[in-house]
Amino acid sequence: MNGLPERVNICECWARDGLQGEDQFIPTEKKTAIINRMVDIGFKRIEATSFAHPKLIRQFSDSLEVLKGIKRPPDVTYIAIIPNDKGLDRLLEICQKGYGVQEITAILSASEDHLLANLERTFDEAMPPLADLVKRARQAGIKVIGCIGTAFGCPLAGEVPLEKIVELTDWYMDQGATSIMLGDTTGEANPRQVREVFGHMRDRFPRVDFVAHFHDTRGMGLANTLAALQEGIVLHDSSFGGMGGQPATRRPKYHKGFAGNTCTEDMVLMMEEMGIQTGLNIEEVIDTGLMAEEFCGRHLLGHVTRSGPVRHRSFRALSLQELRIHGEIAPALLFAGKMKEELSGQSLVGYVIREALAKNWPVPEDLNIVTDGIAMKGEFERRDILVTKFKVLAIEKSKGEALLEVLSQKANGDVFLEGQIKLVFPK
Image 1: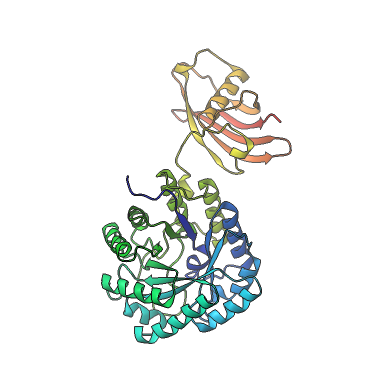
Image 2: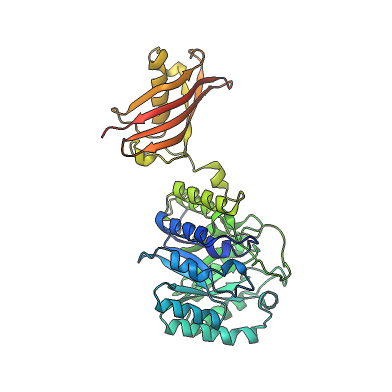
């Protein structure tokens, strides 16, 4: 597929957009733990919090504490939503103390109906104070994302004219915005529309950095992301577990169904499988998604979180670094009819284990596989087929050892091998 970017930059929005619709308050230490984990696994753009009034959205009543508690590597950009001048005043004060953000998002809906539902303001009422906010932030050296919400349609008003998107982009750039986000706020977009809109906007504004922000309300988040990629968009928003949506306030709900963002785990897998570099490891992304699930106390949307990554045989040799605690190793098949010699007892057990591991990695010849903890049940005959699965139970780096749970079943479901093995790597 021609025209796709070689590399993208994904902004992880769980800590802000992801949490704004949650009724239950997520403790500060859990928010900071997830954000710090995002940093550790390679996210370079992170939406950290919102400066919405705590009485309106309680979830962000700890915004200052969150910003104090997160890591500060120089190559990571933190982003906050700033709704008004008072929020900006608070941000500028903490920026002087060294724990602010490098970028803010200013939000204006393309649909006036949506603007009224969220802010109780018309365009004429909302735009002057927002212009002042953008200019003040730029004067303070803070970059500004000009977010155009409901850019692909509105649940209250229907279609949004493309001319309005152009008009608001011009307006934002005149105020000093450094990039423009086109937000599919309630999942109204379709891939053809996405290509048409982003194609037109990139032709009209060739020097503007556009951000694609899709919600998966109608199951088209990834399809729309692909359409944006085909138009060369390299800045994409997502949220762990597909969390996000209308803020949890007392305001009337203006749409129904799933409200969340495009799921980070699924987006990263899709892009990496297509050869588009995200700078992220899918296994680590899945682990972080599971961490978010634990903190929220329920299963989230991510398909990849349940299925695991796509199967590939690694080009790197099996080592402790290739294993992760509680991680499952992709199942491997062995057909007795292709064995070159007949084996029995522990020799057969060792052969089955080594062959199954070799379907996933090149296995070092000097790897010691200790099989004392394996029970063999029955015979392995000439036409038998085995499917062997592993789960990593423990890793002791100081000893160079890993403990794995093993289950090997015949094609009819009968268990052939069951128990635990120890892998002892050469030092």
